[in-house]
Image 1 (cartoon, one colour):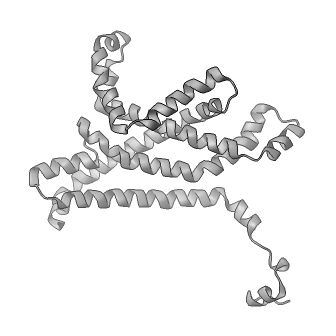
Image 2: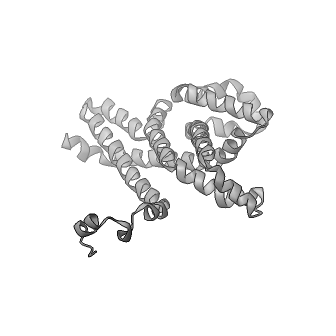
Image 3: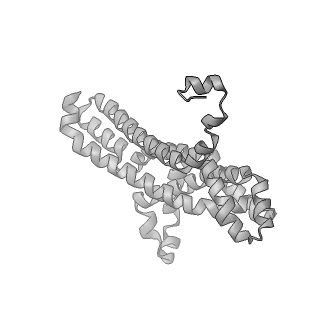
Length: 247
């Protein structure tokens, strides 16, 4: 087992770099697209809400692998049209096809996560903003969006983790991410332990991400923890004594 790791560590790390790159770029682009779509998803305008709902339903209700095949192999059916539009350079590259698929898929999930966050903002805070004379834009900037993102933050982290692990599907369109490199190494050595090392690498990447995301979450909610922590002055006498505070 260690022999495989020693011989092919450079290839596995190269694959990890591609995996992280695809995940990071796709997550950032999806985050930028998800916000306006989530606001539109909450709109009372049916003509705006329903197209977004259909987009979300399609990408959440179909497998990521099928979506990747539709973009990568399906675009070849429209090569002439894409050439005329000057877009064939994009769709003939498996990297860009994978990136586009991941962005669309993650956007659909993030839209629903943010919609839940927007719906969960206490209406009393919005009413307070109206009473203070804030414009609708200022309400979103100062009240609605900060609260919505704080509420949705843990779920957004889970979505990025799923995107990181789901990125393994790009190996089927000749991209050498972690799984692509693993398959190539296995075809050379027929040693199944390489899949164990790939699993360890995915576990390491997700564990580091979870730790970092948790630190960010604690920073975003530190004021809530300070507000929820009981003051020793309000504790019963018995608890103050047990806490080492003189009555």
